[in-house]
Each structure stands twice: as structure tokens, then as C-alpha cells.
Image 1 (cartoon, rainbow, N blue to C red):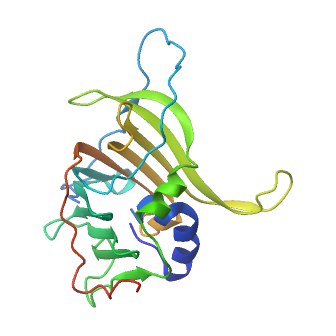
Image 2: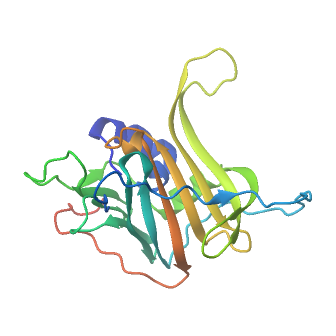
Length: 241
């Protein structure tokens, strides 16, 4: 998940870091799993709950999969937080995709080690996104999310979730015939009983410029509210003072 230098300034300030700027390509054309979101079967009952919007906790640790379907990518994914800092890591040195994104000491970083058709040498620099950014700013953006409805994520374990959508459109914010264009969109699925537990995210937008379709999924298999491990890579510059 990467951002060009020029585009990062727009996307990060507007969409909370591209919803946090947030493989093994099997021999032959691999097929990533279909998104697991599905509406509950049977008669529907009006939802009288007042769900809370997604909230990124200060301390957490989660494991799952990072999926880019048009590339046939399905790789391990971890997302951890400690004391308000947080770090996403997809893939690893043994996979064709490997990157990490961090919110670290009021600064947003993205570092791509490997990506299809991106040369390994010279190594890509760690990108420190200009400006002040932290978990509070991210959560403030999440408060503007729009509630889609209750759903069930079907998998090894069915999860009852609330589906939220958050996005940013560039240009005029006035209704009517004015110029505007989409920058980014995210669909977020959080536990119905605890909106700090994240189970699935779809991101689409300019923050994913290395992918031809500009989209990516991550799905969580575990998400615990215990402090994780967050480490700024050596090649990243110091955080914003």
C-alpha cells in the first residue's frame, strides 16, 4: 500500500492516511478468497441498535491476511498497536509483497520492501508523510463514517459485524453541479459488541497506486486488545518533533 509523494499530501490529510496509511503469488494464476461479507439469511428484523463507529484502540494485536485479488495476492498480515502507535505489516522477505505502514510518534510512515514489477535495487526509501498525524486524528475521521448496516462475515467462524463506510471526495463540498472527484473509500467491518475490534477492511483509492485496480483487502483472524509490538524500521527518518 503506497502513495506517491504528491498524492500523499492530499490523501493523508483528507482520508486519515488512506484508512491508515493502512504475498504469496502462488505458481500460476492464484485466486484470492472472495470477500467474506454476507447479509444474514432469512427474514430481516429492523435494527434498533445505535452502533458506535469504528475506533482504533491504543493497544491491540491482530493477525490475518492481506489480499489483492487482481494480482492474485493473499499473504500474512499483522496489525499491532502500543500506546497509541500502530503498525501494519503485509507479507515478508519470503513473499513477493512486503510492506509496512506506521503511525509512530505523531507521524505517518509507509515503507515498501517488495511489490510486483518494482525493482528491489536501489532499495525504496521509507516515506515519511509530511505533517502531524496520530491515532486521535484517525479516530476523528472515523467518526464521520456512514453506517451501512449489520452483516455476518462468513468464514471458519461467523462474525456478527457492523459495516461502516468512510471516504473522501476532492473538490467542492457544496451540493449541486460543482467539480469533485473521489480520492479514497474504505469499508470497515467491526464487532457489533465492541467497535474497537476490527475484522475486515476494504480500501480503494489513490493510496494504492502500485496496484492496477487501486484496491486491497485485509481480513483479521484474531484481534485482541492487548499491547502489541511496534517498531520503526531503521531506514525511516525520525518522527515529527
